Length: 291
Ligand SMILES: Nc1nc2c(ncn2[C@@H]2O[C@H](COP(=O)(O)OP(=O)(O)O)[C@@H](O)[C@H]2O)c(=O)[nH]1
Ligand SMILES: [Mg+2]
Image 1 (tube, rainbow, N blue to C red):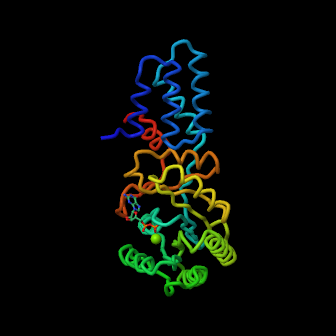
Image 2: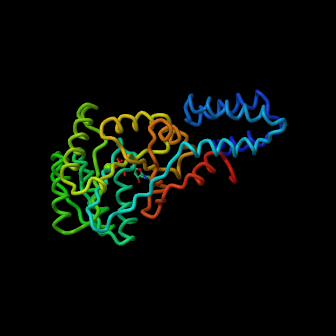
Image 3: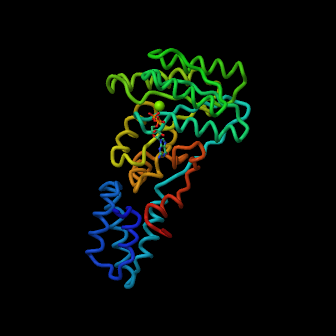
């Protein structure tokens, strides 16, 4: 079996001699691990300096230094809800990344904290998407607001806000389509939804936009984040499928380049396979520390 990224880094940091070969191998590995050229060079330059400054430097010292540097680039944001105001979470991301599954997990998570959750079926692009959310609504005992297939997603969100206000529910989790006939349509639709929600939600402070990123996607995650961030200005990232990914280096780049924090991580297909993001845990796994 092919070794995971963390296991390979661990093996590299375990070698006795820290020489130029070591740094070259490290750079290749970081590039392969989706950390991107800029972050890779910044890290390897800093580690080289450290190795030069001290005469004897161990691999594990460099590994810890690298973790500290990456930690500075990563922020977490664990969203707490207002009990008295209406909170609105717009869940965005390309097709298949795990948006709908994540909504069901979030519904379970926030419901267990005593919130009343309403799901909004904003993915009207695929007929099956509405049924899928319906099933999750039943299983998580959440109410759902939906319209017919191919309806206007912004109208669904609008209705959901009115409905939640009337029922005094305090959290709306809105599903969205990750795909349209073309990118221009998608961006237009995203901006329209954002405008509708902004104008209808009583307090902007409680409106948050999350981008779902599939950990198995690699480098492409950065361009996805850039596209959505340009369209609607994101608040945080949710990483999914971290159970099946050997690496999550693209996340470091997203945090570094766009300055976005990470909220949650999905680690399986069950509702309980959902964690608040923990930077130390993530970096220890990524870098093969304590692995
Ligand atoms: N292993 C694993 N699978 C996941 C995770 N999150 C979602 N999935 C699966 O990914 C597939 C697509 O999920 P879905 O929520 O429909 O994606 P959407 O198109 O973005 O709404 C489904 O088969 C999910 O079960 C996760 O954290 N781990
Ligand atoms: Mg979906």
